[in-house]
Image 1 (cartoon, rainbow, N blue to C red):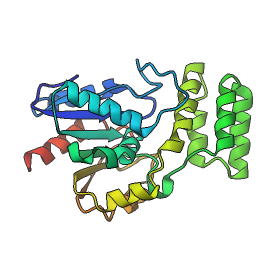
Image 2: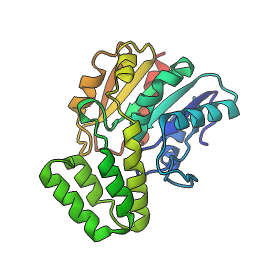
Image 3: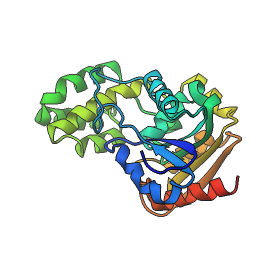
Image 4: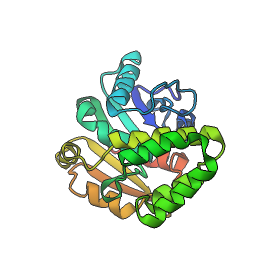
Length: 248
């Protein structure tokens, strides 16, 4: 927990990060917000025995944090995978949300990729097969059944074994996180919650054009672009959020 502000901000980190990444916001936002940032399943100190996680489980986690902080409303901020999760949980939480902040959201719109069932089975069995795993990923890429995004992602996350475990458990959870599911698209097209989307000028992992296309019909969406790459939970993005707070 960071900051001592009257408002509650719950931060959901991206893949291969943990909740401590939001500590960098404390100096800039701590006067306005108390920042709570849990570790996602398979990350940090989170204890998770299931093979995947589902949106409703993250909804329950967010609601538990709000109840513990005795706050009925709050701001939700998500980076990368964390933003994707918040996009998918919005229909269940919107009545309690004062504002959304999405930083380099991953898996949005036309870039929404989820594994097929057979790919999930291979991923589950391949946790202990580093050599064959890489061969399968490369073969899948050549056959067109593994996207370039997932190939690049896998190549940097195959070693050590703990990273393989995190990668494939998270990978298999993506089937529950389709941002293109009809009810989720419909929610965002009629969304009435203020939504700030922060994108990086040089992001290697997510295409800004797909993100803009997904949110272009969202009436309460606003955009900011900052210098740098995909790692957007830093002092510069905190300053953008503070400016938004001060203009309300």
